[in-house]
Image 1 (tube, protein in one colour):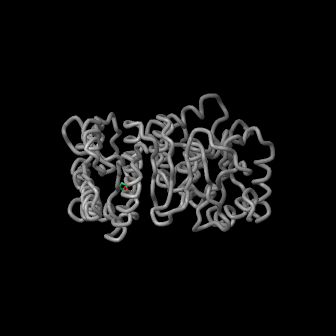
Image 2 (image 1 turned 90 degrees about the horizontal axis):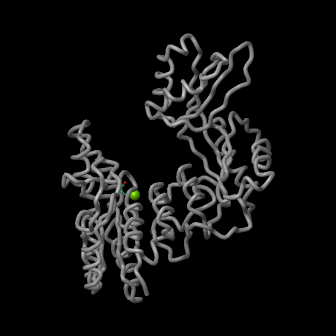
Image 3 (image 1 turned 135 degrees about the horizontal axis):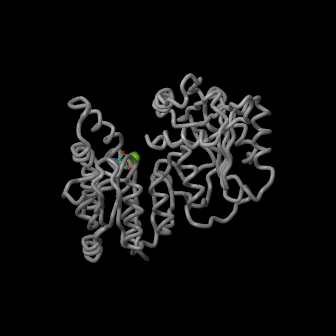
Length: 402
Ligand code: ASP
Ligand code: MG
C-alpha cells in the first residue's frame, strides 16, 4: 500500500478501448489499497492535429494561444478516463494542470514548473478519489495556461511524484521498457531491467524516444525512481534509478542520431583565440555544438570541424560566412552524416571499449569521420548511408545475441 503515480502516453489512451484498458490498470492498482494519481497525455495524434488546425488559420499564431489550444487535448483525455473509471464503479476526479496546482514560469510553449501546490491533490486523495491530472500543462503568474513542451506529460508525472513523495512513479507507454537499441531498426535488442539516470539521459538525448529528457533530469534531481512499462503487455519494464546494478554487459545501449550536420572551416589562422571567437559567435546565437575536431597546424593554418543539429546547419554556416574573421575561408556543411554512440556508465575505467567499437565499424567497412568520448559514452560521426549497418554491427559486438 502506498501512493502511486501512473502516467499514460497518447498511444495508451488513443481510443475508447485503450481508455478502458487504462481504467482497468488504474483501478487494479487502487483495489490493492493504494492511493493513485494518474497523469495522461492527449489521445493519439491529438496534439499534432491541433497544431495542424492552428497552422491552417494562422501560421504565426502566438505561443499563448497555441498553449490555450494544445492544452485542450489533455482536457479531453482526463475527462474520458474519469468517466471510464466511474463506469467500472470506482471514484475518480479529473483535474486540469492549474486545478492540480501546477505553477509554471510564463515561457509559453516550453514552460518550466516552478512548484506544485498540493492541497487540492491531497484533498481529493483524502476523499479516496483516484485523481486524474492533465499532463503537459500549468498556469503562469498572469493566470494563463502554459504548456511544458512536446512530450511534457512525463515531466508532469515526475513532478507530482516528487511533490507528493510518491512511493512509485510508473510511466506506461507502447513499448515494454528501455532497450539496448531501437527495436524497429536493430536486430537482437534486449530490454534492460535497470538503468541509471545518466545513462537514460544519454539514451534519451541520443534519440531513444521512451522518456522525455526533462523528466529524467527532474527524476534525477529529486531522486524519483521511474518504472517504464507497457500499458498493453503486463510484464516487468525498466527501472530508472541512481545506481543500477551492473548487468553482465557494460554497454547499456547503442544509438543512432541522424539529426546532425558537420561543419568544417578550412585553413583558419593557427593563432590563439580562434576557437574562442568562432564558438562564442555560435553560442551567442544559441547554436549548440557537439563534437569538435581541430587539425594539427601546418603552414600557420588549421582546420576546425564540429557538429550541430541538422536544422541548425544552414544557420551556423550563414553566421560563419558573415564573420569577417573568416573572410575568404572555405566553409563546408555536410548534412548526410549520422552519429553512432555506445552508452554505459563506467566506460572510462574499462579499457578496450573504444577499440571494440572501432573494430565493429571496420568489420562492416565503415569510415569514421570524427570521434568523441565522455565518462559514459563514445560517439563516432559517420556517413548517413552507413548508419543502419554501423549501428547493427556495433550492437552485435557489445550485446551478444542469446
Ligand atoms: N500531448 C503532448 C505532446 O504530444 C504532451 C505529451 O504527450 O506528453 O507532446
Ligand atoms: Mg506524447
